[in-house]
Length: 151
Image 1 (cartoon, rainbow, N blue to C red):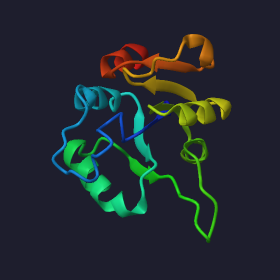
Image 2 (tube, rainbow, N blue to C red):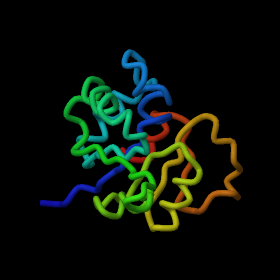
Image 3 (spheres, rainbow, N blue to C red):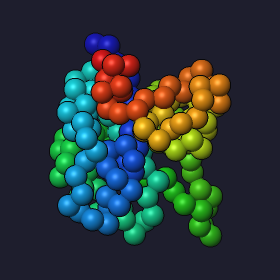
């Protein structure tokens, strides 16, 4: 049996708005539920998010309510504490075996690209010129564009 590629998917700005964990009634980003449902047929999907620990529980509840059984796991970036350093999304993607990430933050896109992870740089506000981005960072304005690339 062929092993399925793992896609890491960001929460804020990709699945839901940046207030998702605070306002539990915020709806998922337009087209995200349908796209995730299609992607899970061919890929193993995991959420990789940088959320403050205070929002961990509400984030998990929101994901489970809106994307029930779509993600194999929900991974949280660790923030710098007196007990250890911060981890990056690139490090987490490597740990879980993700070869692709869908994210809306340039810093994450660049870090993941440098780590050899294919990046789909998500959002209509990504107005950077293609000359600014590495060859393995592809701009996608919405979930339809993601599906065109991956399905």
